[in-house]
Length: 180
View: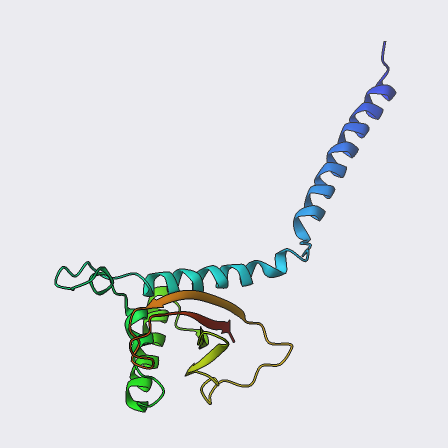
């Protein structure tokens, strides 16, 4: 038979076990450990947001049956903007950049994003930089190694760009994104 003293030891042991489990539970729930993978989650989300916005900008709003070629029937805003002569016409350039930023913010659903873009194309022998929006506007500080930005890119086919008439081009649009 168990004496009263044995019962007290049993109750004391069960109580101590419950206290230890509760203490461990509270300690583990009150601390958060950041692993190196956790610090890049916001970068991955920003990169996905940028890729999605570029994809939407490179998708035609509707099929235009009046176009003479399949390219004209499905031309997107991005293809239209990048086909303009942005080098010699500053008014068109300014308008296109404003529309690009507005659409990007609309599709990303985030007005706090900061961005600028570059366009690369091949002239047959070398890769050239087409001055789309480079360097960044004056209100953007120069990047340092501590800045936190991501790069998203999209290949865009231009059937007959005004800046190189008669020559179809596939250009690489590179957009730099960050939040302050």
